[in-house]
Length: 444
Image (cartoon, rainbow, N blue to C red; front, side):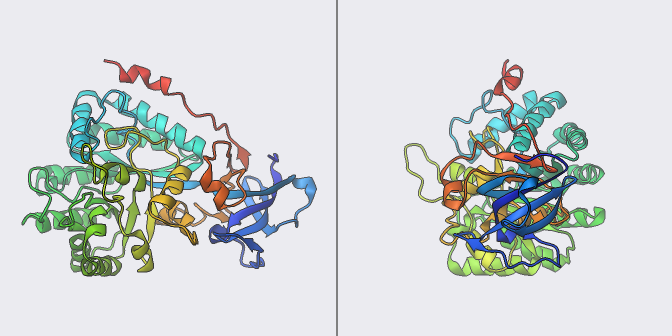
């Protein structure tokens, strides 16, 4: 790779949907292939992208030709669980389903999640994500007392330590019914003090998941009120189930409109919607559009968890109706979710791998179009980050991923282990942290 404060990536291909040239530049790039790849030269100066020119424009003295290599911006993971990460070796989920995951996580949390344990596992996850080219992460933090008092201070420490490398945000996660108690108010105060997002699972602990309990509207209204009073956005786990009668998403959207909620609302999972009749899907999408709800799908984890039964082949893919949501104008993202914990035995905080799997699980191809935005510019916008994040933008930081692959067929067919990750124009060490760093935490 070229080096120096002023250099060029010449003869590269960038998804046109991610290019942000300056207003005075000619945008009639020559494009090739599925995914509309623009053939360009990128000028890097002082760690920022100074110009985007047609391929072959910049002089060879600034850098060699990269022979049509694809260039992506740093990617964005808007839904993960750094506090749960990497506990699988000490607390596996023998059933591989949601109830088994919830039980195993609860046992491990109560026994092991002291501040140093959470800090070291989350740090390991961030080291991995950074080496993979992830530039921003929103993590959910298990928040049932007393865990919120442990994990939010750890998050604030990590956010400060990783500033300038990974933009780090947090959201609480707890059962909805705690907002019927004083614990919910206390949690909202903790979230506000940490500059985080107020989040919960839209189900109660001790009541059936479907139909919605009579207290649902009271509890959800309380969430909206607490968020409004503190100026907080919401980030919710919604209808992560294989039961088509799980229908809290539409009610969340309807309540947001009724209450005039002004903050952002991100709803994750929404799996059961895909199993509902077309008229129910249409009504839900209409409500979400009216409320301005954003959606994040977690394809690898939900395919792993949903429709699982011993000795039986799964009957569906576990993911929501992302095509229909996008067609209705909703902002939709994909994200990594759980990594090596009871909710997902695998994963490596790699958003390029998450996108690759999302293309196949959700059939985002033929044509691929601008779906790469669901792992880059769209989640960046959902998180409220500067509009240069998740894009290749004139004036933006040169935080880039350079692939040997020349087109999407090559990029999606092989694991891109030999990628080069640039931060402010400089190649970083992409050596992954060794799992042995966590061995001490796995014993006992």
